[in-house]
Structures are given as C-alpha cells and as structure tokens.
Length: 334
Image (cartoon, rainbow, N blue to C red; front, top):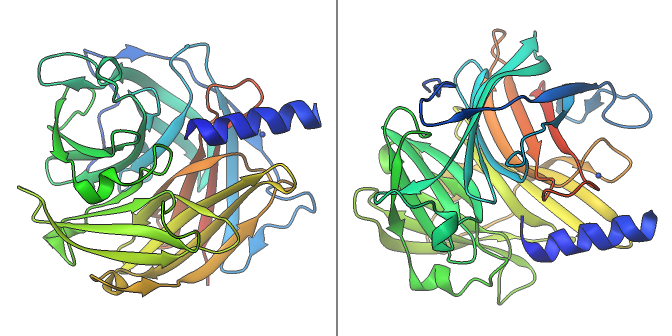
C-alpha cells in the first residue's frame, strides 16, 4: 500500500485512539510461524449473505517475524490451498491455507524470502521493494512495483528460489504518481485481449477514472493501448483476478478520515477490456468500517468441490500495530 494511505490510516487510528500449487518449501526461504484467529462475523449484524456473495469465514493473521505484513498481492492454486503472496517491502510469502470446507482455519508451511534480481541483489536494495501486485503466467509469475512503475518477471516452479528481470517499463506507466502505480496485474491465458493488463491505483489526470494499460506480447511486451474503468465514490483499485467464467473481479479500497476504510468488489467481462474502452462493471459487494475489513489489497479466485467460485481477500497492514492482516473468503452463490 502507498505511503500516503499508510499515513492516513495512522492518523485516523490516532484520532479514533483496522493452476499449479506453489511450493511452500524452498531451501532459500526461511520458515515463519503464522498465528490465526477466526473471524466469526463479517458484519456486526451477523449476516452471511451479501447480494450474490456469501461469507464463508475469515482469519486475523499475525507472526513474530519482522518481515511478515504488508501483503499486497495474492494467488492461490486450483484447490485454494497453496498460496503465494507479495509484500510491499519486497518479500515473498508462500504457504498453505488450512480449511474446513470453505472456511479457513489456519496457515501452515509458511515461508518467506526476499525477491532478488538476476545478480542476487534484493529488489528492496535496488529501490524496488514496494511490490503491489502479482499474477501467474505460464512458467512463473509477474509482479508490479509501485514508485518505479515497473513489471518484473520471475520464471521457475518456485518463485522463492527465482531471480527476476524487468519486463515492462513504459512511459505511460511512468506518468502515474508515486502512489498510483501498478496495483493490479492480469495475464489472460492466450494473450487475449492482451498478454499483460495493468490497472493503476488511480489516475494522475482524472479523478473519475482508473487507468488501464495493455501490453502485447508477453515475451517482449509492447504497448497495445489504454482503457479506463470508471472511478466512483473515491474508490481506488487494489487488485483484480480473472475467473474461468471469463469475468474480471476487481477489488477496490477507499479511505478517508470521515468515513474510514471501505472495500468494494466489482466484476466485468474480460472481453470489455479493449483499447479505448470505458468500463463500468457490476458492484457485487460494498462494505465499510463496521464490517470485518481493513486495508484489503489482495484478491485470488478458485473453484470449490461444489463448483462455486471462491474469492479470497487479504489485507495490507502497512506493518502498523494499528492495523490487521485479514484473510476473508466469500462464495459466489448467485
């Protein structure tokens, strides 16, 4: 999460006095203990159904490791168990979500490692530690790095052992403000409509737009065009994931001192993402500070045994004792 938002959260707290499995074991990584306590209710009234979404459970996560926290991007395997996350200090976190049915009950086999360049230096030491987004690609993963506004590629079956290289550094991306960078990455299989889709946190030019960028092909990305997602009620983009139903699910976050923190989930068809398009999307869920939320920044999707689409959300605590790392799960039951 951007420093601007981190400062806002801190100020508010003071004023108010919140595919294939990724290997969980890697020799270059260090094991970490992650404690988990259950979230029984998503909202104060105890409701479990919110439009087409049903709350299936959640966890408050913590760890004695000083590197744990700041989780800003998330992917899960086809079973929704093995996961990979990135932090905004340039670290990988992998592990396994332990569940009872669709209800998460703990984190097992958690390990962490710093992201490294091909020469072995950490991304953080190169001024590229503010990693905000994550996407799976054939043979590896992509990460989006805020402030420098770059996309890096890490190849290999185990990202915690991989070294990365810069894949995209584009003048249009560079125009994004320091805190408005590539919060969202998508890499549609087959490169349709583009090999890499980047959505910025907000636009430097238009308060009513979330900026989108298309790059094609993946092997040697070239700008293919731009699109816009309509921005309303001051919500910023924080992550997105592509489902097997052809829809993009967009996670958004808003924060201000008067209203506090809020989240929103929207969806729209991938086919709507075209050069020059303006996308509105359908709102699936809106929640404010009375719900069990924090600074929600990561979104991952999988199908459960019943064929339901499961949405897993994770929050970025900004390494602040005044915030929490939350993992939430919803099922699409429309």
